[in-house]
Image (tube, rainbow, N blue to C red; front, side, top):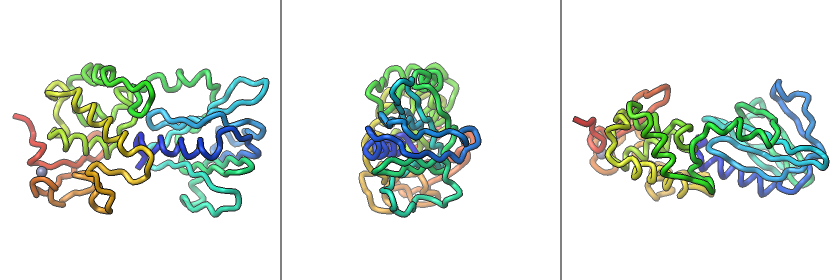
Length: 263
Ligand SMILES: [Zn+2]
């Protein structure tokens, strides 16, 4: 489940395997780029912004290009050594294959794959709120954006990438549990918005650099979350059965006792 930290790590792995190298072949299995050939382009860097992955390419005499992809819920990038078996996902999910002399990058189930001038990245991604894992993370700005929609639920507000970029469903549910917030609480009724934003950022940042995500501090299977994915299991704090319900086309998990409906 890609959250900001997963995309950050995927971008870092691609960067480590490709930066500075020249592409020897590219294979796009998406209609809009089917005839694109990126051989001869150098991978300058791989970066993430929220849940978007940006592979920046340069070539002498040309303006830079950015290969953009969005991982949504199910996308992934994997780097392999030449000749290594591709074990990431079923082959029919492959959307992009990029090769250099020392590595092969395989993009599975990518969304919104596009090739744009690097100079146009802002046009494509300018709507995003402050990036939780960005060097320019700005908590005050994220709080300001959330507070501007006082009637939205706090769960919806945390997932809205225009407010802050990088929180997915897991960190949303866990943040709300740790703050004792009922997921449908209107933003206007959240007493400490800044504290909530700060915690969400801390949870995402503390998981950057590994694939296993934990909010409890334990990396053991079955112990990595308080409420997410734990429907009907006892709350780790009070023993009440964790609830699960649909909320704005996503699911949400919460402890009815630790996160009571206000009023
Ligand atoms: Zn509880």
